[in-house]
Image 1 (cartoon, protein in one colour):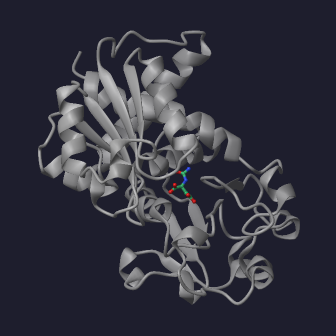
Image 2 (spheres, rainbow, N blue to C red):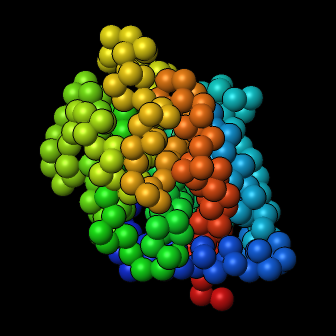
Length: 309
Ligand code: NCD
């Protein structure tokens, strides 16, 4: 693997290798090794054209724990806002000796373009491209599910995962569907028809328009943010109605199976797709997802940049 652009490029074996490596790194970190010398002298650039809190910080923490030098480059306040192209930016990064570029962009395919054009020689990691993919989020989600429900080892066979809400705009959903199925889980997408993409029936998942029929069947319920910034149209009548039909609340939480968990990639709209008490409930592993993100991104950087050492 030279880049991480899409879960489509990750085999089941390499996904398991990333998860195992993340588990090992997380175990070592707990045993008080906070910093590894593995990527000393290497440079990781965070190239963020879209706003982000947790993903950018997570990659930064991951790179620093591996002793890499980190350059944070956000589009606002840079020459990009003066109209510099992706190509010129890439050439600049190449001149600065970037070994890896972590890119988030509002255009689907931006990471692929950066990798394909060979403007720079470093590894490209997709940290979210438009509504297309967000592979490290899917990996950290799989890691979190495995830790909580599969004894931390093996794949996710036999588990039923419900992904709820704004599937249409969600790169998290796309990457998760690909990865969870690769790892043997059954995925059910739960959403109003207006928030399902065209062609979704070819994704190989089950589809439901009724959260109440699914809530007591799933081992994992993954709530998605309603992505208002990508909505140029009316996708549901009112927020109240959306919450009533597709929001997670205490009453629905009570009906979940023993041991079933609640996930959300963040940032959450508390009160819209998830009630505050659901987000903070005992079943919620939302904060754990953030912590696991660092271990998983360390594993990805390690395997892409330092794995052979
Ligand atoms: C997600 C994203 O940016 O795609 N967030 C994240 O990476 N933690 C989901 C979202 O924005 O709703």
